[in-house]
Length: 320
Ligand code: FO1
Image 1 (cartoon, rainbow, N blue to C red):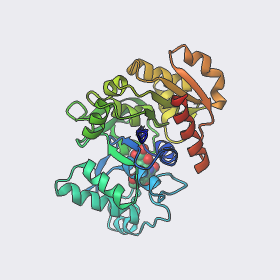
Image 2: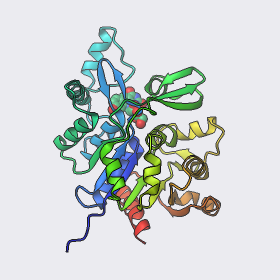
Image 3: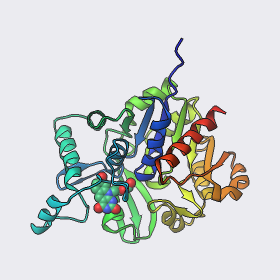
Image 4: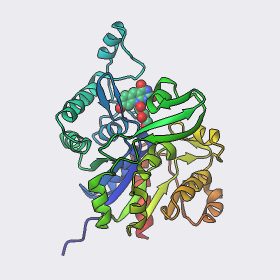
């Protein structure tokens, strides 16, 4: 009898999560990887529905992403945005010409009554991606950043204000009424995954919105697959994005231990294994006191080899 497929579920935000997802696709069999993606930083802009984290996953897994930024399409041009600027339109959110095609296509399909899950699956298929990319919900959930400038929609905080306001907290507008992704919830109920990986994404604005969908973290915690969390903080800094700055402004220790504390406080019993970087190895004993099994390895992903090596480590951790 053929061995059952080892299905992997990865929870991801944008750039950091997409790097590990790419490693996981290479290290698992075709079609075995499912990625549940944050959509709370989606927004409606210039009449289009923009899903930044889904697109980062799509472009990364299709080999199209801009290698420097991690988001957007490589070799991009900005002719449409420049023309819009000449007309006096908004240009603070850098939409490239090729990237615009994705937002146009998605917006048209959503307007025809397709769900975000259907549109995402179709985009992934057309880009030749074998992994399953699931939006966290088909219902609108929008991150609001409470900050020194007052309450800001996520992309206004992140891009327009370049993350400079001091944050005091976050909330996710629409989350109570939203349904978690139906396909992933059904697979969790059927115990279809061998391992669940929480990618090294921002805990507050990428992973919290996924976990706080009604019933989501409880479904993850109660299925039999072990949950592995990879620290987004290495040596006191975030490899990408504002996670370290947010932790400091929220009065948390800016360490892998601070990350572990956040998950243990808000989602007790969810995480089984916590993977930290070799440079943080001295924190392992203290983190183990938080009742987590700690794995120590190189977690900074620069090359494809780094991504595959970390993915292999995570998969082997739960098989050992
Ligand atoms: N991030 C930026 O820092 N500046 C931008 O102008 C920008 C444009 C952009 C366009 C399309 C897209 O899919 C993503 C884009 N991002 C941009 C990235 C994105 O806003 C963030 O990385 C995520 O929302 C956080 O994960």
